Image 1 (cartoon, chains in turn yellow, blue):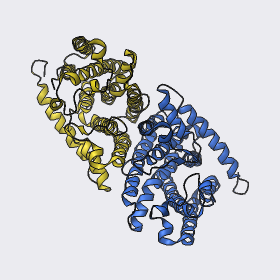
Image 2 (cartoon, helix red, strand yellow):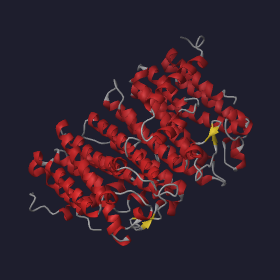
Image 3 (cartoon, rainbow over the protein chains, first blue to last red):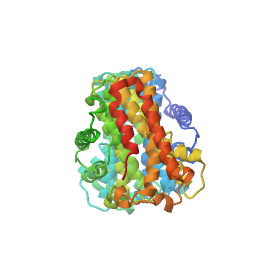
Image 4 (cartoon, each protein chain N blue to C red):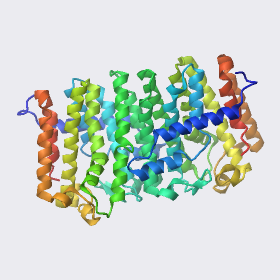
Amino acid sequence: MTAQTFDLMSYLQSRQALIEENLGRFVPVLYPVRLYESMRYSLLAGGKRLRPVLCLATCELAGGTTDMAMPTACALEMIHTMSLIHDDLPSMDNDDYRRGLPTNHKIYGEAMAILAGDALLAYAFQVIAETEAVSAQRVLEVVRRLGLAASATGLVGGQVVDIESEGKQIALETLQYIHEHKTGALLEISVVSGALLGGASSAQVELLSSYAHKVGLAFQIIDDVLDITATDEQLGKTAGKDLAQAKATYPSFWGIEASKAKAQQLIAEAKATLKPFGEKAVILEHLADFITQRHY
Amino acid sequence: MTAQTFDLMSYLQSRQALIEENLGRFVPVLYPVRLYESMRYSLLAGGKRLRPVLCLATCELAGGTTDMAMPTACALEMIHTMSLIHDDLPSMDNDDYRRGLPTNHKIYGEAMAILAGDALLAYAFQVIAETEAVSAQRVLEVVRRLGLAASATGLVGGQVVDIESEGKQIALETLQYIHEHKTGALLEISVVSGALLGGASSAQVELLSSYAHKVGLAFQIIDDVLDITATDEQLGKTAGKDLAQAKATYPSFWGIEASKAKAQQLIAEAKATLKPFGEKAVILEHLADFITQRHY
């Protein structure tokens, strides 16, 4: 497999299918049925599965197998899903639609939506702890770093500052804090956990962490741009919401064109950090490009 | 130290002080300040600290040190606190007071209360993963079992069935399911995690798990009895709420006196399972008694 012959779209499709099969297996329908249905409703509602894809690809790049990373890959999607369910709640972003479907609380009610999120979050750590064929020490390091990425020092911290910043003039540093925590932290641990599980050295983990940091930031910049330039239908959610809510975004600081250029620059830097891995990094290189080339 | 000379009250006071000192250390005030304040508001609002006390005592019974169990002890209190914050929300039990103080969402708002709970839950697993002086394998087993106890297979499952049963005639089996999951699971893992961290054998873990199961059930029966017989002031929350909400309770199946007798029987059985540990089990024996002798 080389950069020339690699077909990202068929790779993504087969990975997404494999991840969805495993998500469905990890969260079957048990008693209490409505709780599991609520968890599955949001967990299996589609999406790019970017975090699990990054985790699996990085594990393999580092010399590990798909099996070593699959529990963590699915756990990352559970935590991502938890954050979406809770963010959509009436007391938070109050969103009625997500990926073109009614949000969890619109179907199952607020109490169940909160509890389904809680269950997904706690279960994610259990699933990781059940990883086989990787040393307990490495798995425990994944648990530790995922805790950091998912709590007040990570995505919850980012969400809090995001809420507190609504309708306010904020500094670029605050916007960066929000994104580095609200979306960046989980993207970064997706790559780092794959590296750890695959047996990467500390130096390799550092390089891959830097790659993920840059890709995460580019991802968010593009997201902000798309909120302005895409339609509701293309996004599967309400477009123009940031503008309507007077939310600070990268384009509001830099303008649309400079934001796009900044994202491209970050992607180029991210790909440059992969150089030491040579041909093996072809998937992560393509994934970096994929993120900025989204047109929807 | 023997059963005769052991002073439970001074033991509990010194343990509670130590646990509170560590909770405050684990959750300092960082940025975003209001998030950490919200986490600390509920985490440091007092309470018996029964779960951490059980974890520490069992770890020491099994031959471990306080340091080995302290991170997990504090993590258990974080998860317990998360469940209280979320249970009190308007979309759940809609409680305005907890331990005589306004509930978290009454002070910080619903969004922050949800997020503070999420942060405590994720952080709990990180704190456990940072345990020193215990093998990674044992710590990972604690993570795994805590995931089971805190998710759909544990306290969230119990809370869901509790909500779904409100205002309905339910079977005794359903009531038992609710309590074994909503409160029992976390009490059980409090003891089991202490045993694992302290180096207990599988057979010892089994015995201690059985002790915790019986104590947990007795604890809930007494709680149901106190809701009927105690005053608001004694409980630090609204008394008679179960009756007012037509909630199924053990006394509603068995009557008050038979419920008390059943709790006493469970405590006697729990203490009997401790026999193989001899004098070393004196603290767990006293803790079992303490639970049924609450008069408030």
